Length: 349
Image (tube, rainbow, N blue to C red; front, side):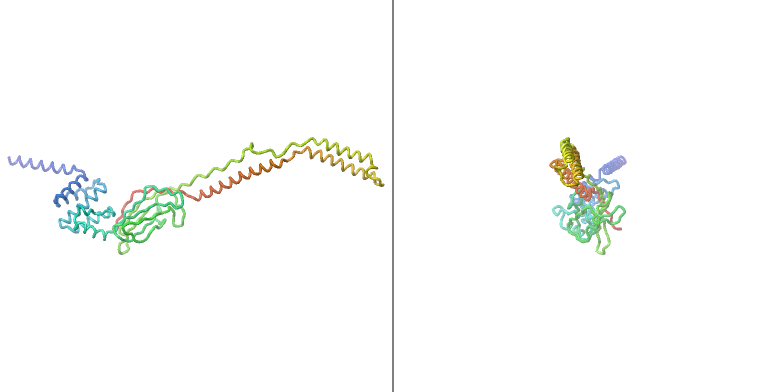
């Protein structure tokens, strides 16, 4: 009978242990918090420590933070002050913005948490997932949240680790707002690629104690040039010349005058060289008739149409020059798209 009872107890204990192992880490955190609220600090510490130390733990950051603060409080009430302080420091490094609820935890817990905050140097970095910098004055917004006042260095690094741009060197208290215009130190736009935003927290001795590193995938986008205006259609131009006349009248008139001069020398001159002069005059009149004949047959310009065509060409040329100037300006304006990745924390050894 006693053997059967002992066997039953062993089976029940094994089942209880199996049920505990079957619980998710989040459920174990909830059980640990309930144990703390029931003042069972030993059980709370065991449950919470188990949930937080499992290798395959899939705790969300919010659940992990709750587990750490309740575990720290349980350790304090178990008179393990150093362990509680270490847990609070771990919590602040996980989330530098974390503030303990003074309505939930008594002064001895909140007081120790604040003491740990004052000596823990950590920063949380918040940037938008996507920033589209397509005009002057736009910039990537960078918000820093610090546990306590301490010096930080903020820089954008090239893919090879070399510094592209230093954004800030100085102290940060509760929070600090920074911005980056997406340019290198010399004002040039960086090539497309993966860059790093690194925020280093420094200790009292000046050494880096913690770094937050975010990936920044940068894409340079040049705007397409504006199309050049098409030249005016031929149908818009006016005829610049009119067809010439026959010129026959001018030719006949010139030849008739020449013949008259040649036949009637006494009318032209009365001196001794009249025979020679009459032929000179006759030749001149005949040549004038021929030139008049050719001139009148040649197409005649139309001044008002010529002026209208020149104005049309000038208007088109001005539009071409304007578009060329706009394209030059567009090529100098580089649109930059920045996609921020998840951050990782590097603790100093």
